[in-house]
Amino acid sequence: MATKKKDRPWDGKSRPSNDKYRNNYDNIFGKLQQEQRDLDESYRQSLRNKKEREDNEEYLKSLKDKL
Image (cartoon, rainbow, N blue to C red; front, side):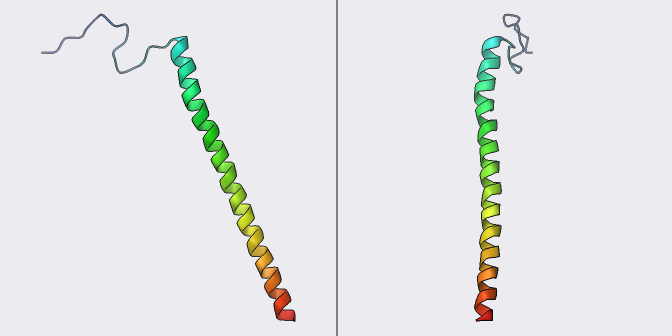
């Protein structure tokens, strides 16, 4: 039968909540969130560029048909 060890102030599953842990957490996941925002913006820009290219192609096709 397993017994719980009382030498640690936490259960081993959750993390100790101290300033060093919070700073490291913010360092790691803050960067990931910024990278995700950058990727999202890049994706939206690529969609705008694609729409602009399609609009330009339609315009050029209509000019070609007129000639």
